[in-house]
Image (cartoon, rainbow, N blue to C red; front, side, top):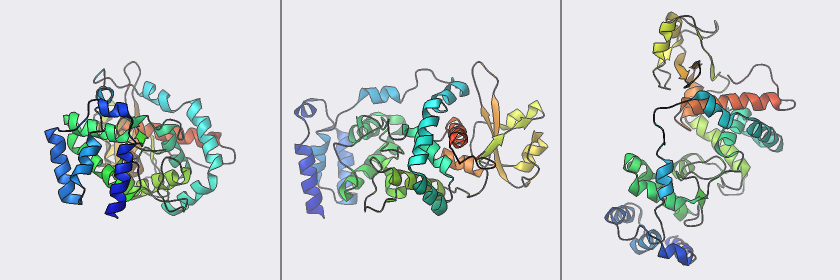
Length: 338
């Protein structure tokens, strides 16, 4: 196995374009050498091969710029929502659902996640594979692992997972492209999530998130189930605030650490059928120049935030899911995802 991997690595490095070798690289840096030593000790990589890889790996200043918001502290739910809940994604979602209906039904049956949620996540992430990213993944992960101190530990871990995936034959080393954060494929999985949650859902013996919509569908569903998705349960609903003091319970968190009884006591109107002990979170979707919108999120709302730790993200997924379902012929079932 190691001989085959070494040969594959050597071929990949030899195939790198000449201009890549002339650009600034990560070769020789002390922090990179320390990382190489860890990979050799922990996983049996060949030192010379990793050193050759990092000699072909280049820092990307544009990634560091993208990771730093130009305006801090300004959030706008209407602006955020408009990026993802729009006619382009709705119509593309309807078409994706129609093309892959049997696969989505199979995923829903196996993992308990509604098709519209799977479709909406893929729509938010890449517009159904149209926007998977143009950065070399090895460049993106190395830039963030070695030149982005705020989250260096996380991205060093993801770089480690990426190298292990490449050695296992599931990813290319130098040719693979993804987002500026190193996420891969139609559902934008980080390497660690690929190793833990990606599934071969089309039965071809590979977990291919870039070219196989079936693998993407199954992997999104497996990710959500693995994080605690509760089949058949609601996700969230708009909050009716009967007292302004209830707003204080929306503290910016997404964990359902309160109960329905607590929210009722604070005069948040709840569906009568919701048991008092139901875990809940009161979410404020705020705006700069408009009234905030409040939702009550349940456990499944929290699960969606494991994909992207943002209440705006989860709310966009839900609204896009509802819009796609409403626009899909024959899929306007009673009730909804919310």
